[in-house]
Length: 287
Image 1 (cartoon, helix red, strand yellow):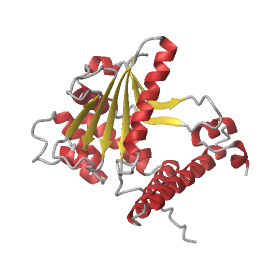
Image 2 (tube, rainbow, N blue to C red):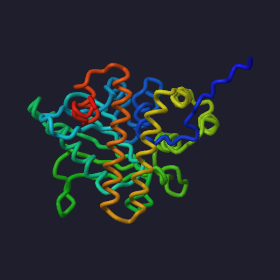
Image 3 (cartoon, rainbow, N blue to C red):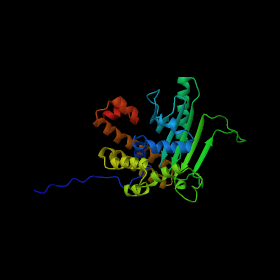
Image 4 (tube, rainbow, N blue to C red):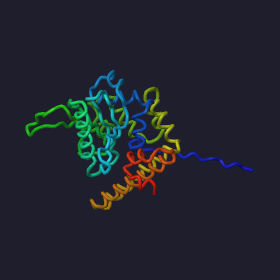
C-alpha cells in the first residue's frame, strides 16, 4: 500500500511587513543583533544601551472593561523613562498614524503617572508605502511651534519609507545598517534572502528564523489571518467609499481576533487573558 506523502505548507513568497511575521522576527533572539544595529543607526542610541534593553510587545493595561485594547507591535524598553515604540505599517489606512501617535502619548502618560517623571518616547513607523509622496528615505517629526521651535524632547516620531530606503537614487546619505534592514523587509523569498545576506552571520541568523516560521503550521495560521485582513481592507478601500473602507477594516480586525481566540482556546488559555488579548467579551468567547 502506497503511503501518502504529507505536504508541508509554506508561506513563500512572504510579506516581511505582515504584522505577525514582523513582530515574531523583531522580538526574536535570532534577530537581536540585526535589530540592535538598525535601532542604533536610526535613533543614534549606543548599541551597548540597546543590548541591555527589553524588547517585547507593548500592551497598556485597560482601566475599564469597555475600553479598547492598546498595544504596539514592538516596545523597546531602555529604562522606565525611555522607550522606543516600533510600528510596522504594511498598508495605508486613514487613521493609522493617529492611532500610533495616540498610543505613544498613552505610554508617556502611563509612565509619568507611575514614576512622577516625564518619559521620553521615540516612535518609529516603518511604512511599506509612501503616504507623504517624498523622495526622502527617513522623515523626522517633533512637537514644534509655528516658528519651528521644538517645545520639548518627550516625543520624537520617525518614519522609515521602505521603498525609498532600498532605492539607490534616494538612499545615498543614510546609514548602511538602515539600508540592509530595509532590504531584509522588502525581500520575499528565502533564496533571495540567502543571496543578499550571504556571509553576514547576523542576518543569516534572522533568515534562519524566517525559514523556521515559514513552515510552522501554527504560525502560518496567524500569518494567513493577517493577510486575509489586509486583503479585506484593500478591497474595501478600492470600493472608493470611506464607509466601505472602515467597515472592511473593522470586519477584518474582528475576524482576525476570532481566529486568534480559537487558537488560544485550543491551548487552554483562560478566558480573561484571551479577552484582554483579542478585545472579545467572555460571552463572545463562550459562544
